[in-house]
Length: 552
Image 1 (cartoon, rainbow, N blue to C red):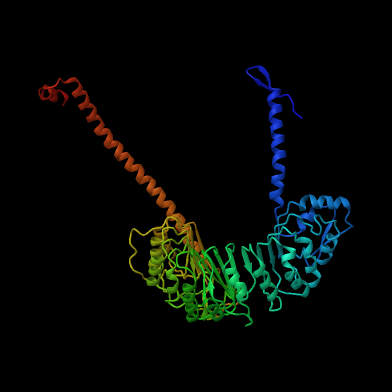
Image 2 (image 1 turned 90 degrees about the vertical axis):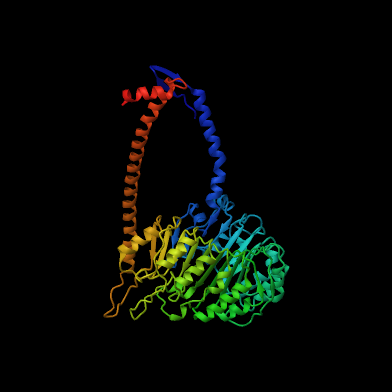
């Protein structure tokens, strides 16, 4: 493999075969050493079985329903290839666009002589299983080695085979640390509660609302880090009372009804650093205020760093135009007690009543913010064609930017066209790179761009809501907000370039003036230095007087 390498230099041939061989040998050793770690990383996390099937010398046919079909019988050599890569897989999920785990395919793969008893992926640690029908869920046993650490059952249906599997969960997966399931029914909850009470090392749980006994067990757990609570639509759950240990750092809370969510939190205490609230519907401002008041009572004021409130109706339908999603002016007041907030996302509300006074209160209460978005995730264009404008002005935006110096992402709906108070000359934030204006109105792009360049000198992106497509009522002007905000960003970049050129020229002129002044002072300094070196002590005045006319 190694070859003599001749290098012609200065008319002579210098042969270095030993060095070349050593270099190639070291390269071969390096490649061999890194091959297995590289393959482990490549195959570590898969979203389906398709990559494993793609390694087999077979033709894989895709069906119209997104499923896969193999064109021949699998042989012993196929199993060797499959297992060569399957043993490297640590996480297996599912691809939402394709039904790669169909019945025929799983039945075919289950014919392999599975390693370690009954599993196809012997070293799998995390499994996300979508199939919840009787014909698909029975194959889950081929993908759950005893060493599995995380199991996520995505499907919302609970057939008998799935409920039976959960009832035997301690036997199937004795080392399981994370168990998450979607929409558990009242029929399966007793088995889940029993499993929770028997568990000793759970780090994450998502199983509806566990029973009071199971919740007490979770409250005393020293290993639990993520707590998911999903309030069901039915009333077959019981309120709990108690305090979770500080090791629960992530709290994810889902509910269909805000009143039920408030009821659940009434007697519960937590100290999470991250909290996510997910509601399926919008509610009026007074209900949201009551919920925020309860949230400020249930969550520790000092530990909370990130809070995200999401409404699925608005996420799925950004043009949602119901007024009940609007916050009142003091709705956010209960949240001001969380002094260490770093990230706050309340995008799915409309905030027309939040004004500059509230902006000042928010900035004073949350000085550590790095990411703030309020009201930017929803369209404010009503079906009537009249824009719902925010009472916040550029002054409020500037105050938040100035008094939250760590901000990198700022998202607010404001009205830059309204005359506001004088913005102080010192207000500026060089950390903000992205500004999300949501559905903010815009008219005078030049004036707004000049102000934003002054407030946010390092701004790189401006995000805005795209105009609604489809039928526009007669007499309603075309929505030009997105285009005008794009123009604002272009003008900010142009103004910034002009500013840099002017700054460079000013620096150059200042340097010229300084060098000129130094040159003049330097000549006088050299003259005085030479004179002092040649004049004896005591003769300075006399010789200086004699030489002055001559020098002049």
